[in-house]
Image 1 (cartoon, one colour):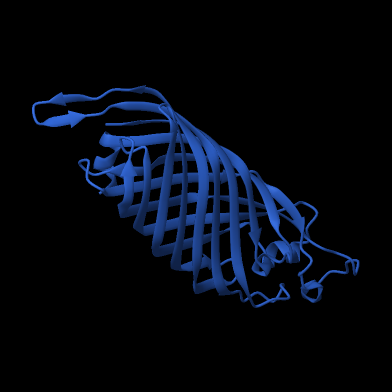
Image 2 (tube, one colour):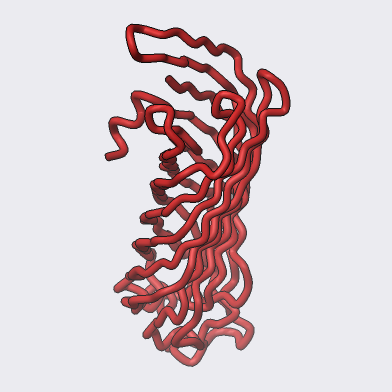
Length: 275
């Protein structure tokens, strides 16, 4: 269903920001903070055949830099070789993955050639991120056995509601914002670390930005009116994934269950078109 929409409207975005990953299942009690880069294909709001019904979509690929942490929840009693009592393994983490969302809704307000609107939508989404962990050379052989280099795979499905708002400041400049809240359910897997858990939670995304129209034109062809537009955008986006009660079974960690929370904050620029 998404593929045909690219013909009528789309925006290519590049973003830079940070991600925060928090869950004790990784052996660290605080946040793992990393720089991220995002590439997105987006359409926030596109009316269907000039009616008040609209669709929107967002397909985003996320990639982070590695971030290292000393594991303060490591169970030293598993070590078979004599080590200092202060020994803490050092692990590096990296987040990558894909998130996709589709919105279908109706405008309560729509004017100024569809540049000013207030719409409500049903939202469907899927997220498939994964978190890689890497040992350092300084870690013991026992650490590398219990916590080997591996990948934690996360798959979630969600359904919820979205609000879309835009205001045409003047002819070529518009302000826009969006908010989505959704229930999500999914699975977290990493057999090497002892993670194989189903979990429920919620997802929130919110953002705002400005859209500047470089070109717009309207022409009637027979009974069809076409309105090609070319524009650039800049803005900010916030994403939050929470999964409750993720279980881990690994005797080298001083934890067996915790929530998983991933927060992304990104500034973006983009170029888009619509017909």
